[in-house]
Image 1 (cartoon, helix red, strand yellow):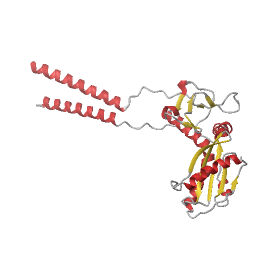
Image 2: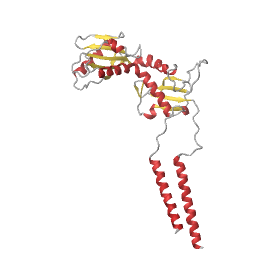
Image 3: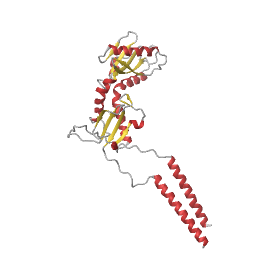
Image 4: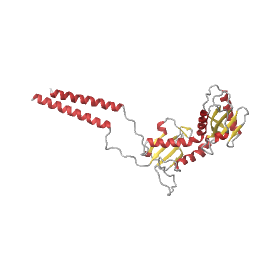
Length: 303
């Protein structure tokens, strides 16, 4: 009777262990985010900072204007000074206000009348549309052989026939050549990004401390558009946007790829068993004990 009870207990332990094994396997714990060692999480944090840096100058005026209109829903007119004081960059973008009734323009940077004519065409279509629900309108247009980004808001935003159109625009072509490199350097070269130390781009300045993070931007043909740092070995790649998005958008260009590299030594793995491995070893041990027990019981029974 005692032997049979012990046998039942061993069988029960085997069943419970197997169920626990598959339960753990079907509910894996989410990986911990580590921003101190070379990892995809670290690379994604760096990439997010780059994206925010190169997009803030043209998005922030619209975002702050939207917050103002939400706080003061009765606003019927704003001044150009109110719009330009929210810009985070002196060169990018060009802020404007178009008075719908007087058809007058206010702009904070000199620009071509051909560009304003192109913007006006979009504004007229927007005003005549019934689908606008008071949100910001964002689009691109062609003017003078360049591609331009345009974002604007109706003032008041919920009026079918608004008093003003307030917004921003800039040349994407000039942005790629002139603005993206200097905005990226604002992150890489200045002590405003304490998360990681960036590598120097040759020639090296021996007065500066050398870091271990490098980054590069590839165009749709896989050619290097911009890189900062010097170590771009495949084994040091910790994050690539093309790995996560089939058709990524980097620097407003669809299909470009932002890659982050780390020359810091990766943490050694091994030597410790994870929870699932430990449970597997316990299951095998219980099974072996059960087999030995039943073999021993059978032999004693024959004796």
